[in-house]
Image (cartoon, rainbow, N blue to C red):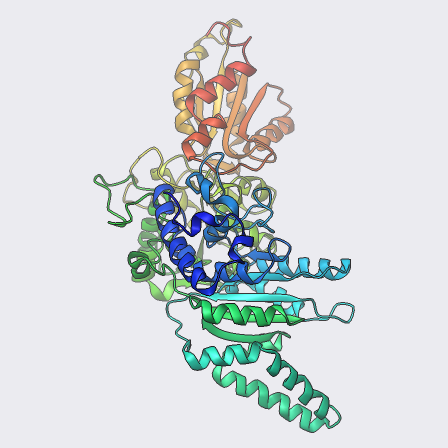
Amino acid sequence: MTAPALLSRINSPADVRKLSRTELKQLAQELRDFVVHSVSQTGGHLSSNLGTIELTIALHHVFNTPDDRLVWDVGHQTYPHKILTGRRDRMHTLRQQGGLSGFPKRDESEYDTFGTAHSSTSISAALGMALASQLKGEERHCVAIIGDGAMTAGMAFEALNNAGMPHDGKVPNLLVVLNDNDMSISPPVGALNKYLARLMSGKFYAAAREGAKNVLKNAPPLFELARRFEEHAKGMVVPGTIFEEFGFNYVGPIDGHDLDALIPTLENLRDKRGAQFLHVVTKKGRGYKLAEADPIAYHGPGKFDPARGLQKPATPPKTTFTQVFGQWLCDMAEADKRLVAITPAMREGSGMVEFHQRFPERYFDVGIAEQHAVTLAGGLACEGIKPVVAIYSTFLQRGYDQLIHDVALQNLPVLFAIDRAGIVGADGATHMGAFDIAFMRCIPNLAILAPADEAETRRALTTGFRRDEPVAVRYPRGAGAGIAPAQALDELPWGRGEIRRQSSRLNHLTDPTQPRIALLAFGPLLYPALHAAEALDASVANMRFIKPLDTALLLELALNHDALVTLEEGCITGGAGSAVLEALQQAGVSIPVLTLGLPDAFVDHGDPAYLAAHHGFDAAGIEKAVRTRFGTLLASV
């Protein structure tokens, strides 16, 4: 899409700062249209970005970025920021291999001051920058922009608590902007509220407030009475008492789409020292009626026609692993009344909508609080309840201490349904489920299952749920091999893998000229391994269990083969392949082993199929890797 007339002249925030108020309003409309058309061509986050158009313009207009630091929380809402900071002409590459990231990224632009994608980090990071400026004697403004959803995380409140404390006698200069876009919250944002916001952020109010303090400080009872009166008077018209208690000067709420309110308020706060808190109210999907009506559906859409909006595909898509989990959750809840389900604010993403509708009293959405989610599950398990924690692989990283200390150490029967394990695609390194095998495998008492397909995922979930110990079942984003699950709630044999293909060369055990290779697949890589095995005439094992590892099957394969190959969609370092090497070493078995998995590097964003092929996870890549490593051994194949 060609940029509209005014937007086409904006190559950096310096250009935004030259515009009049009238021009800024025109820019907002052009920017909103550009975002809709841009996302419709690439897919990406839409509703949240449409809600921050005016706020983004106002921040870049008032603050001297990049010298002043803007720290965005999560990053779902930063497309307008990217467009205004010199990346407009690259938006067609968004979330594609070699293109722009869907989130702020430090090595992409100097305006991306802190890399984000996981929630609730902005206040901590901006406070760190503010303290650094104070230590170095530099004058700059540091601004954290955080959503109301991200404010549900404990980390945000830890940062607020720290930010209001003096360091070396001075409170750091920090502005926190709360972007409140919860549809169910309707605070007053009319003329009176706008006036109050401007008044409380202005110099006259600040001077009067400080003057009254100086007069009354010699009369402690009167000073305390005045302080309490001020707090409660403000509390009657604004919900800011809690932030005042943290040591912030609270301003708002104001209309986050009203540039005439935003700009003068931000200018007033820019000129104040210490900890400032601005509460703005915005609407997700603003300006695009379809997104306004259904902001959840338009949160992260694929490509679409802006004139028609999202359309149902002509042919039904394949059943995803997430959908398999959602159906299993409902079926198991019918079968076992002890089951409860916990999610850290990912009801739709984790496939729990139907469960929530059917079993509302057994559904717990704890907000963006992964640590709390894990320990909550532990507490429930102590009382005989059977909790299922539905969580993305990379989000479980945030509850790692609780996984060890509050669940595994006490050997509590909690089932972790780990979605987005392995390659996720367009969301990139921040959401790539590369590390869960490695960081879980070292934890005592915790079992780890890696089912190969949809049918096996249902059985793995049933198996894990019925164990009297903590169990993690990992499965990827999207669809798999298309193996339809059975309706029954059947289990897998505990700790047992299976042979899915036997090499014809096993008939020549005494002939050293006939090489025998075995592929050990953990998870959905079983299917490309089976295809590769046809060309290699290799045996294939569906290992299923990462922990406990089926050592009996492993030693049998080692005895009957000349080399082993492990395959996992996770990091090689400390992963399932490492478990195989450790088991062989402990058994005193020496055999060549090739471990295939993700490299010791962060995997960037791109098309999932491309990334899988790039990292050698397709049949051709597996065959090539095996021939490269065991070329001499396979010379006759």
